[in-house]
Length: 571
Image (tube, rainbow, N blue to C red; front, side, top):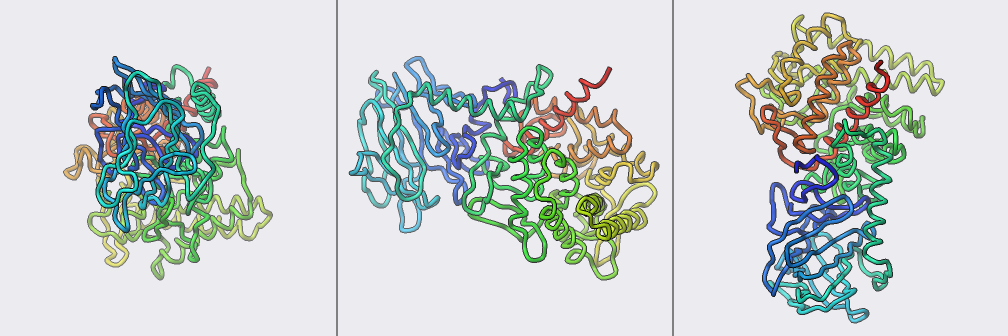
């Protein structure tokens, strides 16, 4: 069964988690690092494996099959089974029969600055791990059965620490909680079956809101909804709102353009959550008006930025959710002004990136000759953003400001065409050197996002060039015939969700719906075949890097929803 074939999935590819939780259950314990056992992995203060869950039989490791649905994780073998389900975002229930369980700390080393300390709480007899890496506690409370061992209680230095439940035929059950310093002893009379039922209802409510249009024609919709639902965390640390992380694998942050795609995917059915995604990065806008590069529980990075696609995204969020119009306008205005002041060289109309990271296309071949460059994609995004500011200002009855932003958009569009369009293609320009160059990268074709704002001949040329990037699976970010193409080259070949969404949308507004339809169909089929990876090999369709990426799931939902709407309106 492929990752996107239905609601059942492998925790080797997609972490088992729950909306609001800061931890998951997964084989993935670090960047491209897969453990032999399922681990409880926390994303507070970074990504940290906390506990190992090792099924046993007759005291030895049992070979089991591990499967998951959105509401239950299961280990099975002929001798018995273990089931795990979330009771709340910070508590899981685990029960077993026929199999035992070893539950040791993932890290055996306790130092003055790292590792776990393990003790039995004299208040209620529960076992508690305190972990330096997350600054949190993990409490295990036995609800049924017995504990056969508790190695490492109060041990210092290097030791195995944890509890052992025997696999002697007696059923057992326990609860595991993540919390800060103290809480009342665990108490719940909810039967395990009801815990599973409640978790299922919580997910299905989200699924039905996010993808009410799903059908047999959209077989990956349910799992796409799960990827978004399970990657959502409650506010904590620097995360000021309910947030959809890019992943609960190692890409456990919110980057300042990824969030736009998640917001768009959620906008129709879950407008409040969608609005939280859009506004989250603006909560950390700095004094210069810049948005941070990324945000996570305990870290905000400002060393790079991300491209200003927020005007483009806001247009797709209004309606259904307008938020506070004046606040939205002022935040978007400050973000745009950052580019027009801090990122424009004296006497230049066009803004510049300082590194490929600023564009979101970190290592795209556009940036090979120089890094501090004026590029056509940036100008196009700013034109759209200034158009949105003009619209917002008009709605706020500020005609002078609306006219100002309209004129500024016109000037930048005209400069884009006069300075970077050769008559055959867009080029990039070194800000210091003044030299220009082109590449075989898809980024150079991104101005198609301007749609019908471009002259017809420019649109036609760009659309034809986009088509040359279309493989059997979607839009390669570098032409496969290019000497710089790499199957797993990040932005030097693989298919990505954001480039697909932006170009598909631009083609429709440019008057090329058939090509847009083909791009949409191939990307949807790719997700249905290979899941929701961070990116995909453009020649084989294989999923690459982080295998549970929310903007990929969001892109599938965006394209599938639009396809279903068109299908209903087509005679």
